[in-house]
Amino acid sequence: MAYDSFAGFLRALESAGELIRVSQPLATELEITEMADRQMKSPGGGKALLIEKPTINGQISPFPVAVNTFGSHRRMAMSLGAESMDEVAQGLESLMKAKPPTGFRETIKLLGTALELRHARPKIVKTGPCQEVVHRFGDDFAKWKSADSSSTVPTLLNLPILKTWPLDAGRFITLPCVVTKDPDTGERNLGMYRIQIYDGQTTGMHWQLHKVAARHGKRYYETGQKMPVTIFVGGDPAYTFCATAPLPDGLDEFLLAGYLRKKSVELVKCLTNDLEVPSDADFVIEGYIDPKEPLRAEGPFGDHTGYYSLADLYPVFHVTAITHRKDAVYPATIVGIPPMEDFYIGGASVKLFLPVFRMNFPEIVDIALPAEGVFHNLVFVSIKKTYPMQAYKVMHGLWGMGQMMFAKYIVVVDAWVNVHNTSETLFHLCANTDPQRDSLFTKGPADALDHATSEFAIGGKLGIDATRKLPGEGFKREWPPLIQMDSDVKAKIDLLETLASKTGS
Image (cartoon, rainbow, N blue to C red):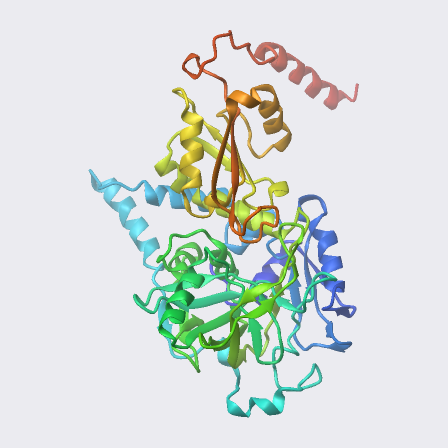
């Protein structure tokens, strides 16, 4: 299912009882964060919030703010038009397992799969709702330099962009979809990197060392040419998810979005650079980065690690145009001490791409990223173990796959352990390991936001084999059975409890 706007997604959430409207004014400075954080820390992620009267420096913005819209398993699935993420993952897994047909029935089935894929490729359209209101800024932008929230011209200063935590260096766009292109191949990338507002026309561009857009930027810095960059916010929520998805470098995220929404993404050409953005986006901020310009301090920012990421030097993004829908909604999120909204986004990515992991490691049963691990710090993996040292093979393999390289701790357990139950997983971790025998220390790339590493973006990693040990792994004792009740006894007590509940005795 495709949504025609972010407002359409909000209407679906409201109909499902997943949205709370907040009619009283709330400041974009800290107050929206506090209300959203209380929802995110509620059981199951609370509700999405639509702040109808956000204020900027005390003045009400004409654009409402939506927050925590992805912050539950249900809302995350709804953002992709599904009942559950399992449903989405099963569709992708069946596609990946498709084989050449051997009969008429299999041919028809494969044809159905091909018809689904026809929506994957994006298509260019001449215009769209994202350009209903247009403001270009050229050399005459100086007259708007002092614009504040009372100005009728939409600059970065009078959009309802949040300041989320007290020590933040300013306001940050927190759900930006950043479009760049490889200058050599023309391959497009859609990423998500926080955007600090410096003034009405300039921002920081916080793409980290290992990100695709940083690689694109490096090529422009080598040639000295201005780099076109466009940021958009809103539109079909599938775009936001795909901007965070761990796709291989060079694979267009709009292809994934088209597949997930079962409808081609319609792209419209930007007005002041050669990039394209979804025609249904809510806000589009066009501009460029000048490699000849010095880097500028960006941050601090209250980050998903639960700590402030400190100030560092990043490129400066210059705005050349801002366009938006007439009925635009500004989507935002906040990050901080877990659990937060990003836990559900990260969990959805793991479910969706689990079939990819299984193609490389068929022994993998399931993977979980506990909220306490703030995305990739802690990874639980269950496997069907059939030979000695298999857990270590999985650890090394995962550390070599995309963003899994940032995982600080990987714990491998047996197939019957529910890795989504942290208590159950920790029980088996503590029960089944000898720390000296079952621990693996290694080194590798670290998250650029990790403040605990001694060196920037370089750190240690710990793998723990919490599976049942085999003789070939140096274990010479008898492995005891796990305590479990007889199945017949359990069935009898289940029946007695059912009868008691019916009779009230």
